[in-house]
Length: 180
Image 1 (cartoon, helix red, strand yellow):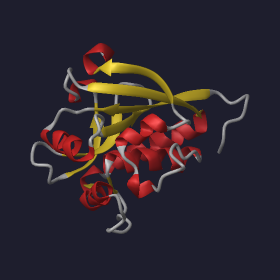
Image 2 (cartoon, rainbow, N blue to C red):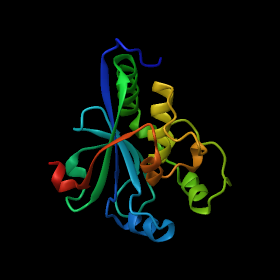
Image 3 (spheres, rainbow, N blue to C red):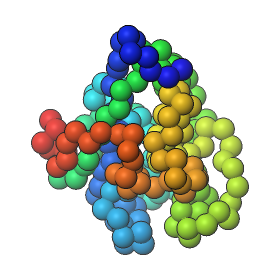
Image 4 (tube, rainbow, N blue to C red):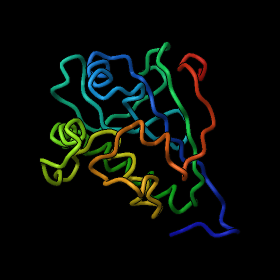
């Protein structure tokens, strides 16, 4: 499950962004953080996350994002971590399942309330229900055995927390338009 010296390594990318949406600006105001969305990628072409749909912020679930999903003026920080080919393939398989079941996935509004209030009021989410930060963190932990934020309870994970991870290597920062 863990890396060995002779195993071929793959890259897993984590990107945190300031999405510049209405809901993001509300979260920025309440939380006082710049980056309020996180996704991960296996190839820097598609990014996987849980997010809200559209302007109203009422519905959401599993999403596949591309660079065109983000506003060009949105700020980002990009990280990478090395994983084994076996871990890489397990994550790919999980993503295929989520793509097929995307209509059964839900954005976990109650977990967002836990984070905003900084305490656990609402319990464990059901299967296929998450917010972006818990989805990214739990997927990495499930398939690599590495908890990128071991000092914090899973349900309290915020996108900006990924900046503090010692398990992720920062590789670039700037505006989405600079990533191409």
